[in-house]
Image (cartoon, rainbow, N blue to C red):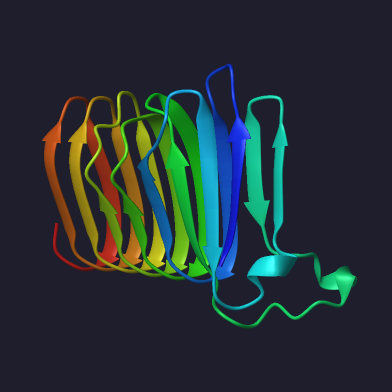
Length: 165
């Protein structure tokens, strides 16, 4: 397992990109962010904090490093962080209080238990969505999968080809 902790002094924005593996966003300390990577090529992942922007992503194809194995990612973030998560294959679980969130997956379930203070945007090709305690608007676009949404403070907009909402 690889673990890195960074001090932060401003509102955190994170971007997590993975080709295969689960992503968890968990509550953390108010003045730091912790990244845990487990499995696959965890040691080759790029983990960078630039100001208050955290980026976690696999190595580029040009690096020649192996990218095929699954790597699970956990972020422990302060409340009121905002983020962007992109994964090709893997489940995403968000248990931390966030300002806003965008999630794009090709295949995998998404569970958000918030609270998310503002907006949530989700794009997925295949996977079930369970969303709870979203203060703002929720926009969902899915090709296949069931959607369950509770306690939404704003508008709920969704487009699905196959699945129940």
